[in-house]
Image 1 (cartoon, chains in turn cyan, red, blue):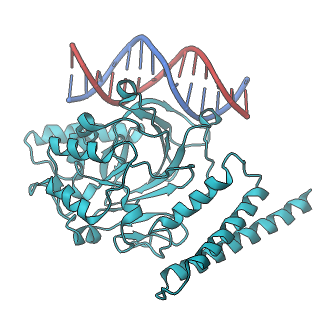
Image 2 (cartoon, chains in turn yellow, green, blue):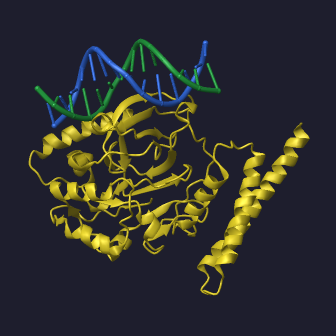
Length: 361
DNA sequence: AGTATTTGACCACG
DNA sequence: CGTGGTCAAATACT
């Protein structure tokens, strides 16, 4: 019994190592200057990688509920990401790759789900509804066995109004700087008229000094909120930096068009996550070669004019959101679109711009 | 007053 | 039966 196990483990490791090697070769091919490399070669490598991992997964008795095609799609999507093959994090931070249990509960087996990890530093506070630009309403909190912190359950605000079944679970990990966010289901809602609520003023206060009066009152309020947020999981703490790791687990559309508001450019500005699919590696600096952590540095933002603090009017937000959250999430991530995007925003010079945040997707 | 959050209870799954 | 996920009444907030 034990012998068998060891043999299997050796085989497993061998398969995984082979996959890694092949991936590395593919990586070299893809980033080598020679354009002569045939597309076929790449495909052969991809197939080999796929087979290696398939074998490994089979050995792990991986459930067949993720079909062959789906697996392939997942792998290809990972390849598509400009950051999947990057070598280093700008800040040298590394996320441990970890095998996580998907389908946290079999109850929701049929739903799409994907998990992302966000590494944050203390300092700034964002509301739980932030982080992806959708409006979330907390509907539960539960102490989870073995977890130091309770898990928060959120559903789309438009559940009743528009029948949107998207939900997410936010779990603060034992190291207090990491949040694991599991999304389930897709947004079928149009966020338009409520979009502004995704960016409540309190996050503004935290990110930078608020320019309005009643300072002391607001600060006191904020302290109270922070206090609450430390004991409950209704808010995230985002600091000068934040990392997000997305687990490419789900079967079809891995990035269902959620938004990542940038703390550095104002809480009312969103950047669509399709960045990850269209921007060059120079813009989206990679974290590690073995993880799919995407980084956006302020300088990179600056290179396309995003380093400035911007604030959108409510109507602008409404327009932008309704335009970009449309059903099948057509990517807006080219620079032309960005230009359009920023044509629609007002620059607010009162807003502090010296915060050196960057975030990773 | 309307909306969001909290929290204990309930339910489904393994 | 234990655990995780959801519901819904009570409460808090705006």
